[in-house]
Length: 568
Image (cartoon, rainbow, N blue to C red; front, side, top):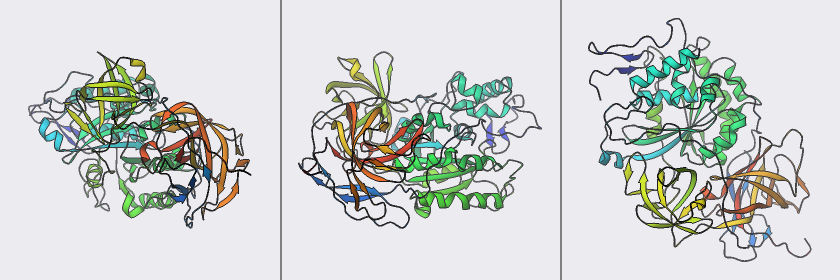
């Protein structure tokens, strides 16, 4: 990198040496920077609806699937007991789709020179050093206008992934759009609609390095209309960062009913994300001014909700104050002259200290395809959930069982193999390119993922659209399971369970209400790749939605249609 290049100082920005020419000011001296702006409506999810599922035994008529137990939601006081439900297994197969974008991904991580405008610069890190660093995916969640994209851009700037030239370009564009303080969000928000409205629509993706890990940032949309896009980002994430605005009125609009703060936390827990960082952003705002009273007030409000969604505060949750716009407490710890009462870690230090989700590189390969790109061949992008992909080896794409050869593997650079936990681009050689679709799963040829059109799941009903008070047998919903998004039908509600004890309350109920826990036969129109939750959680947990409302979440407990005992 240029030895005369400016360095970043939190709260100041770029600091130039005598030999470096400083650019014009990015924003007027009188203006106080803030994050990207927009308003939104959302919906709430009951606080006592917990997200931890416990084992409940079930009776399977044919024992091929080892789902001798399933799970039931419990609330704060609940203890789960065994309960019975009778089902039978059938065979089936195949996939569907989802949406996601790959925004301005960094290229080769060992490239030292500055890149042309429009690309992201990366620090000089050798390929061998890069391979020794563990990879972790982090997703930014939070209500609209909390500062997710701005904080993401600030991380990339402070870690050297963005050149001065790009910052000046985005600053100029932000001034021309009359939204001076949005320039950092433009790093992640690449679409014209996103930049004009200051509202993230699709999941942005970028990479950065710390001294201990390689990270992929997933910048999720905060508006309720784009929750399906956010869910596709969630299924790739290892750690969630919830951005909360400390500015007076903004936290309240996001956290109270119709805000997205609650729903995002709930969905993160439902999708299996255990490590959660709460960033209380905009602490530099004039209405806050790094007030410990305001910080403590927000902590007191958010902690009980996190506990009710089954997060262990001491083990799973970190809470830190930041300024995403000015860069305080992002890479380096905040100075006592700015915030004398906080002595904890910075955001990146906190990330480096968190444990990563378990991974098994020796297990049979499972890589759900999140996106398909046609560029000098077919490129499949996805997160490797388990196993290892090796270049020039033969694999199988499910459904369809089409053979495929991996001719090239790319992460930050071209590699010969890549293991569980990585997000990779695979260049494929396949006879029928139509077999490569979002929601398909690349598998080891000797161990294919299961497929089904019918399965039995335990579902917790958390909410319903405003025009509905019940969910009944035959109800149509949208199913979100790993990269698959498809229509689904509640063919029949098999049993209703007591939320506290797990005991069967009623067999074959005609309907279920909000906060009900049910075992239900679900059917999809075409086969999808799917697994029993106990055997592979990543392909066995799901969320259901109806009319832009998150209706509930669940776990697959048996593959195949149920067979009821006589008399039922």
